[in-house]
Length: 174
Image (cartoon, rainbow, N blue to C red; front, top):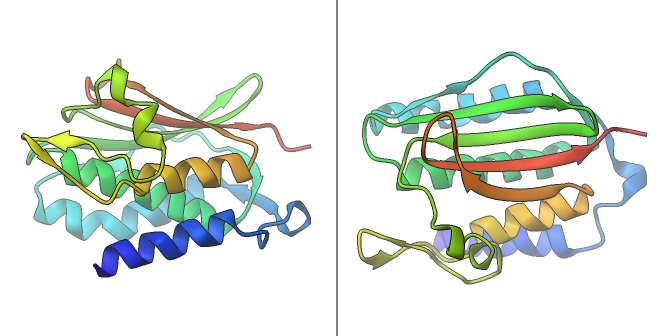
């Protein structure tokens, strides 16, 4: 119940008009990534999951630090929740000609292609091991934060690790 309330409050904050473009600042996604991984490192270790940074690319985006931390934390918590012991969860920052791509990928069970769009909507939950899991807000929060940053959330199969690849593509800062 506490987690659900936290997620509802987070979603309400992202939906509110408190995040204005003039309040955004240049942020280094590599720094945000390191903080996010450090925050969940102990949990990953307890679950015997290898959580880390893949590659050393840097990329600056115009954004809101707290919101981007929430975005990354939701993606990482989902990966840790659904990956089995011994799994790998990596965060990457990739330079693209048209912007910056922030990626969380794993070698867990992934999400079926027909469910990916549906799970980005509020209160749509996935199944894992035959049971319905979560509140259905984590990816909706990620989607709301991405939209607030003029970024695009994409869910796909990870070609590198075989599980889920969640990427957020940001435009180049003006």
